[in-house]
Length: 288
Length: 241
Image (tube, rainbow over all chains, first blue to last red):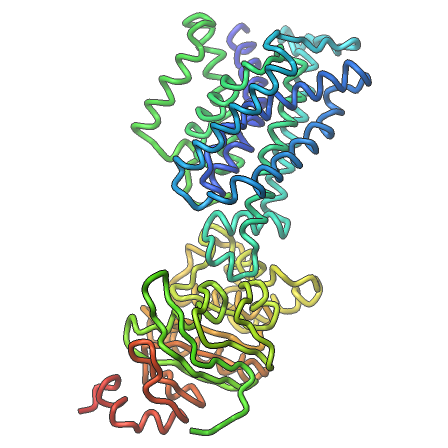
């Protein structure tokens, strides 16, 4: 029963991890930009949820709409105004740029909100449910459900919409996409904005689970990296598989080696995968 | 050379990549509904000409006009909206996308949903194999099928002028025949075709008029049968001594 409970915990954690990674992976895959800002975007989403809850009593699941919209706009402006100027440059250039932007945004948040941990406490927590001896923390279950919904929404968008097809086309062949009349810079901006939207939404959902502080951004970014390598870059199903894999690995790692080593284990597996299967578990070159 | 009143008019066009000039004053005109081929060896600027017309490469001099309207500073999007579609060399399909999605990408700028569906059916009718493989990834098609998909994708843009770069390169003769037949049918429906081709025999047989490019300049031009009879062309491109 313990193992089953750990598996369940891992799956729940993994569903949330998938949401962290999916936007990061999309941006990396389509734009070839490693977005160091991603972790800070998530934290910003959490703060939006926190203050929306504090001042207006909006439930974090509802403020997903606010944080998603705010981050979408912010992402669009950052890509269209700044990153597009160097988007064709080697990846180190854009990495340095997003690193610099991250320093700015993260430190602005440190000044505005301080590094103190804050906790969003729900007045009407759903509590937990006992399912034949398995404990289901219902807030978390609902959060994972919402995360899955968002991830699935992005997947359908990429598959079935005109703009989604254009995003995939730009990823596969920039010049051919241009010949189809796709304005690549605009698609870049929309893609980056979608990545930021997913980060903001993740932040909102996370605010009911994790304490909130700007210094968490590095942690989120690290997870996103590991998941992308685990699942393969730039694919929504890959991010799902990678996220769930990481969640389960960390949960069992915490059980066998102690919670302090669960992250270590994740990174050891990351290094092993980089050596033996660099395309990731779901790795398939080229797809969204 | 028959002097038609050209509607897609290229005059004294120069273009290239950075410091390297590739085109040194090209004059080509294509009327509505016509078939024109551009022949020449590797690396003489044929592809650069098409890339300049479609706005991927900026021209450095001369002019491109369509029905008297300048396309000198047009973006690829403008060129496409004006009715000029470029099927690039090497097909350049979106390999991990389905055949259907590739075709739909050809109609990316169009908003007329029901007409897009009709055109999909038109392409499937033209190339039944694509209908069979509509859900398959484009990358899994054979070379000939990929070229069909690329041309189908071009047709989805509702072109008035369809520019095709290297139709037959690396394809089996049977596939080439099929493709030329399809091009003929597309042309019959009123689309002008500008074909860049290394297979000189087939190209001259297909086209009404021909231009021979060498070192970034047009060296021979005229009706296709005149060009085919030109001793220079026979010697250099058709292996007749």
